[in-house]
Image (cartoon, rainbow, N blue to C red):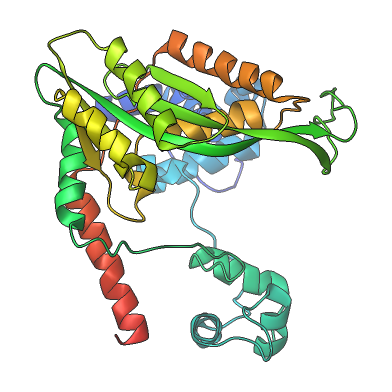
Length: 364
């Protein structure tokens, strides 16, 4: 008696389909499921029985028949997983919009910002759903950032001047970015630092003993990344002039020296002005008021704090000075310059957009 059942879907593939299926079989490390399905289709296309293919690929006849039918009906697109409907939504678009508007335009009574739980109570949904909505739309009520718009009347000219020195330095000249890090504290942890161990980070006490402070002058050679430093007890005008002498001595004769620095009063003292008159090859370029971020040496100070000072424990000023100079020596040995990537137009345009936003918010 003849066997009755569903007719077998014959698989005939073209040369282009065979090439694509062969390519998919080689992507097992990227998408193992699709690679396996491609091997099944190639095997059944060679007129092998479902049972033989299942035995060779160590699967079941049902699986082989499934991908035979899928490929016969939809060709290569049938090998990929179809998007699933999923569970029905429990929060409507209106409810999501209400949470966003409430987050942006209101605050809870007596408080400065929403939390997930206060918003969940006000919106009538779970705090996990509120958190999911905030993450989706990039809302962070718990985060605040500070800003300061420079009131310098020569803001545009100074930005173009300083950025121009970074991106297009003049010929036969050396550009230095100079600043001071005042009152660097020699802090000794109240108890010994416990070193890192397996499954345990380094641990240190939050309280400390002060052993004095020092001031650090630093000048970053923009082209080479080398840093000149000088540690002093204070940052007076005469200390600044002494550091300028070191910079002048480090640059070979015949080259101009351009120094980017901020508007500290010590930089404009009479002693500094007299020294500049005696050294005409040295030129000062001041950053705008409240724009220390434009001074490239600030990036070096950030790395110094993060990698050498923040987690250190120093029992004296000489020990602190030795730690600073050791980091500077290691930095100069690497000699990796910082690259300024923003143009003056991009910086000024961003400041313009921010100013317009502030004006729009406060109606000024």
